[in-house]
Amino acid sequence: MLERITYTDKNKILTVYPNGVYLNDAGQLIGASLPPLYLPPPHKFHTKAQQTHPNPFFRPPPPSDDAMDEDQSSEEEEWSYPLKKYIKHAWMPACQTGPRARQNGHWPWYPELRVRPGTRTLHTVDRIAGETIRNATYKWLQGLADAQLTSELMNAGQLSDLALPDTELSILDANDMHYLEHFYLNSATDVSRLLHSYALTTVSKAFQLLMGIPPTHPLGQLLHFRQVYNRIPVEGARFDVLGLPALKESELTMMVFVVPPWEKVENYMKDFALAGLIGDHSLDMNPSNHPPLRATILWAVIWQMCADNNCRYFTVTNYDQWIFGNLSQDLHTAQVTSPMKAPVFKKESTVTADQIPRPNILECLLFWMGAATNHSLFPLPRNSAH
Image 1 (tube, rainbow, N blue to C red):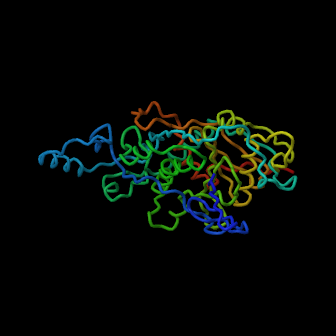
Image 2 (cartoon, one colour):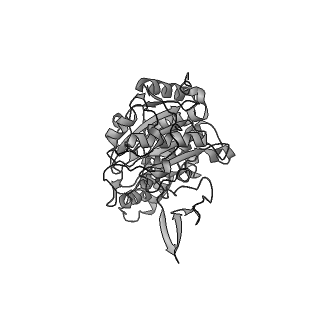
Image 3 (cartoon, rainbow, N blue to C red):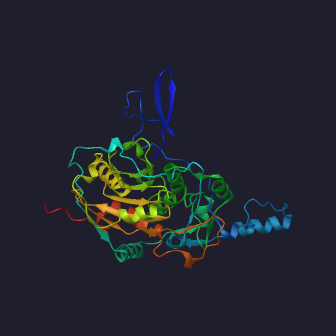
């Protein structure tokens, strides 16, 4: 959710977002179609060899001249590390839930989601077997030439977007530790901010490196997730939407739908991923005497966003759990995985390789970006026969 902040000025109501004004007095959408997301905390790629003390806030006494020369020599030592190995062993830092997180009751009938009966034509949800996406991910990664993370790239500042720590090479720096210590999750927007600052930025950079796209190439601009909630603004929504831009400004390549972890998401995620038939008109969001299910609301949002933005690949996440899915070209059929666990650990943790789920969610996310840009990697469901 890109939360709105409303101010009144001489009986005029102006609705603004944290990063800009997007609705005028008439309620018309203005501003950029893909507003920039939040700036991540300042991050510099640090290797474990550079770590001087397990507590980043501990400041040892100034070293002697001999020690400084020795440290400088150590820092200048050249090294190289496989990017695929880094992604395989990378993990996501946990964050604290804040005091303003809303954990109350059912989701309401959102009037912005109401459409004419029969508009949203999703009829069937099929299951993607865990083995299927696992094998597809491994096969794709094995077929790619690896990229090397090097001391030269690090010193040139070209690895700063690889913001996640891993079990062997990279660590959280002092800025990261400070950010995670004082940043609280109070809304879906906060979860999106955390995702963008670490996991999504890291995977986007890894994709760019594996594809051999130069940092200054125009295609590189299409690999950065953006806030796209303004494309389906729902007042008071408890979800958020991020998206990868496409070549056409009106389209998206892939979307990430974010629901906060306090929304009883474990059962909700399982309900969303259930295979079966969708009831007629159930996604049209016309109110009844019963509150709508979270899964129904999210399917309505996904269908609408995919239809409006010519997008077929998506993920649903609460940060800890991830579901990967896509829609048929005619939008009648969807297929999704079961919820998959992400490698989330406390920021102070010493994580070992055997604690990382296989495949790593970050590997799956990397693959799903590839499939979204090349549908032959994981084809869409077949169009409906009727």
